[in-house]
Image (cartoon, rainbow, N blue to C red):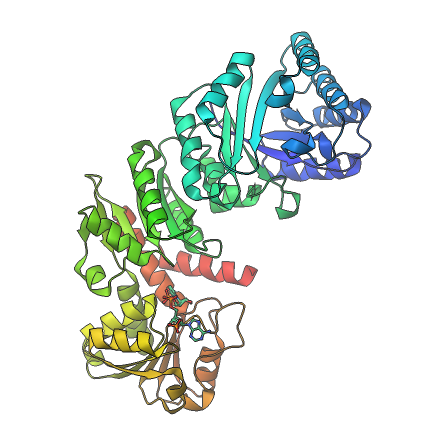
Amino acid sequence: METKLAVPIAARNIDQASEQIKSARAAGADILELRTDYLENLNVDLVKTLIAGINNAGDKKLPIIVTCRDKQQGGAIDYPQKLRVDVLAAALKAGAEFIDFEYDNFLSIEGQEKIRLALSQSSKGRLILSAHNFETKFDNIGKLYRNILNVCPVAIPKLIYVANHINDCFDAFDLLHQTSAERIIFCMGAGGLISRILAKKLDCFVTFASIDELNATAPGQLTIKDLKELYRYDYIDTETRLYGVIADPVGHSLSPAIHNACFGDKQMNKLYLPLLVEGGRQEFDSFIHQALLRKWLNFRGFSVTIPHKQNALSYVRASRGYVEPLAQKIGAANTLFVGPDGKLEAYNTDYAGALDAIMAGVKITKTKLNGLPVAVVGAGGVSRAIVAGLSDAGAKIRIYNRTVEKAEKLAAEFDCEFAPLGDLKSVDAKLLINCTSIGMHPNIEATPVPKESLKRGMAVFDTVYNPAQTLLLKEAGNKKAKTIDGISMFVNQAMAQFKLFTNTNGNPDLMRKVVCDSLSDK
Ligand code: NAP
């Protein structure tokens, strides 16, 4: 059974519906879901006309699901139950392949009798019995699934709930894994996003995607374009190996775009997901533990970023996995790899990524970094990796930071100097590196360094990559200083991760192109 991609048609009238149907067909929908509760002045004839229109469209015939939700279960307009049941019965008569009725409402005698009669008179029509929880997980999703099948064994159970955290998705994954009949199970909300993509890997009967963001009918619904282009939906199967970036927030991350593009480039059966892990160490540990426990999910590696790099290192240490000495020294891991024995390995590719970007940008070898006066602005995670790398190479580092105590602590660890941000007005360094988020989208008019401090003969590296040309780099360029943008570091660290994940080299030009294209889209 191949998971079908259903696109909801949520139109107010026939004209709007025709437009949406055209777009859904063009985008590659496998099934159309007519959300008739969105139609103004709903009546049976309107629905019959719509179905006839779809069935008589000349090109490929698309199966239809007809839905008419009540308000309680996410409906748009609150039509009376009698009308909603009449619409579904008429849809079957008009040739719809599926009708979707709420399980709770099906329990009412009147609704059930009419629906059963209409089904018995239809040669091919099938019933989807659906249950929604718009607040949280179901108390016992397995029991609900069995109850639905007890009431109507030939129905396709549909169980949809809000995942308030990514860890809530595991109930849905387990039920999909334990069952094999036609069933629709996934999660709504930002925490549930991966369940919509993994529906195909876990053999769910359908997954839903919208034509565009404006036409989404449920929270967290992806667009058909993202599903197909960003997440390579057409290539996902039960064997697909999983990777992803663990972060909070994760929506802005370019890692899914670059890794999936490279998996596609090399025709690898691998998928890279955005993994929104909210909370701290406990939630992080729980996610990794639950993801790896379910070997059938086939998670093989993770990128890790704010705020979980320290948590990643602690987890691997506690589970007695392998920790690369450099990650140990930096105190943070940005890459986790699931080794052949199932044990986790922790690495830090930020360090090498940054150092390579500097050496290529300034055109110097590592030995030339020895004794070089370097100003590092910021004392967070990226600064830490860069300070570790530069101090290893013997550079003479001064760390400038808003919170001076943090600069002092980092400086003490790596035996360098520290100063408050204000001292940057008299900075005297050959290489200046911005490791703060100052200047990052949307605050692109900000810069951490007064332009008077920038000089010819200096090299300036900004780790911020969105935008690539930050105000700091523009002002440094105006002073004829050498400039290095954050994309080079980003691509380098991603290349190193790709190598760890796949044991082959990624395509750096493709990675840079994907990053630049994504940034210019914004
Ligand atoms: P982090 O651990 O949260 O550290 C943030 C740093 O920025 C701290 O030093 C913080 O100072 C400083 N900061 C933040 N807002 C500030 C403000 N308004 N004024 C003054 N200082 C401010 O973050 P991180 O992981 O190190 O990431 C830092 C930046 O690196 C990111 O924003 C991103 O642009 C860039 N980055 C680039 C790449 C790449 O591959 N190119 C990869 C990852 C990150 P306090 O200590 O005073 O809070």
